[in-house]
Image 1 (tube, rainbow, N blue to C red):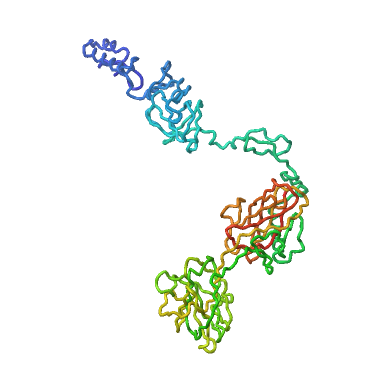
Image 2 (image 1 turned 180 degrees about the horizontal axis):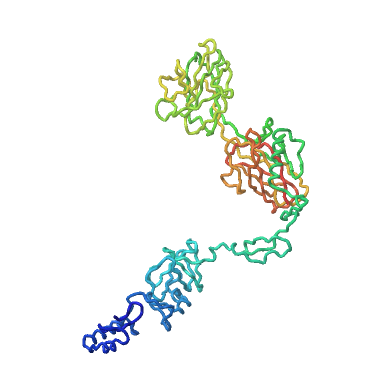
Length: 587
């Protein structure tokens, strides 16, 4: 029966079994026969066949339990399917590629046993033979294929991240090899001393040395970290930004509501340089002062591009619509708003307009057609029509309307009668390049595509002038410098009240960028040196659109005992400057 399946060999001759099977045959008078002898020998052969041979001729056909024993005297593995000797594992022989071959940027080395394929999670080590000169070096092991090397986070390496003569451990993530690069690690995670050398000081981080250094004291002095004593004395002489903003807001509101002329000078830590109660700023470049509102605003002007001297009358305009052509040749200014002036004839009753519109002449069609829906022209702060007496003129409101000096425009208006309809009269004249069309019987002032209009017989009827506003000028404002009680502050804060008339951008990062509309600068040397500050909006003042802004600037590079500011605009920003609430020095 050979091995019994439990690790025991029992001899068997086909009749008896066990260690005394032949004696059992003798006692039973059974003769030794060839058959029994062959059965016995075959049983021994079967048992031997199931044994391992020392020369490897026979091998296991199933897993072999070692019963907590070990192989000893084993040789080093040389193939992937060999046992590993403990020494090879201890020495990391399977992961050590030695000094790399190839180039610094195309790293090659061999492992023993030979690696045939990469597996995610496998780790190898090598000694770099050069410093990388590219950001995408590769590793190729046993010619299994070149794989890109990245840093521990899977990011592209920097040139020189792999340094010649350095040992690296590379882990394969299934796509690339990753190595640890010290330069990619945030070293602030690993803080070293010498920490603070002064008793009770709080250490500070030094970003240059990557170490802690002697830090701030704990107390209530200048530059100290605040210590609050049990009686609250530690809060004496300390300042808080929120408190400053609250104080500035209260003062700003008071200034916006009342006459603040009486508090020019110093109020606590606020230095009040100018309250705009009078036109008293030292520098007001391109700015005009509004005495009724106590504010400065950038100057803007209307250019009179069309200015015509009328020399005759056009009577009987009751219920007419007139279309006046303003040729491009008569325009020299482009702008964003216009004013239209009408003139009545010196004789007759004058005239009344029901509706008036301005727009671009159509590129095709009749010469009295608009290109698109025209813009209404209003009078007397929003009225559609008006009356004008004989010999008088009437100017419209300022109308937001974009004018391109290279284009031709139409002013279309409908008239109503005044008294004797045959004596309603507009002034007119002959003007080269101009032409006026008219039609009786309907109000078609706003109609885009008209028909049935005829030449009036005069080139200009009613429209005496067209003024075009060419935008707000960039301004520079600065007061007369004030005197500080203590010289040499390191920082200044200024509080100002503005009223934007359009969307404007304040320089909130202190770089005076091209997209910034309002720039602020502060100075302690009489504006000889100006430190560009950063703006922060504190809040709105009331419900009229007034805004309180804080300007912060580092003036530590300046020397002096004065306090001064400069506010300027870029991009022709339309904004009103209402108050300088105050400037605060910080030491």
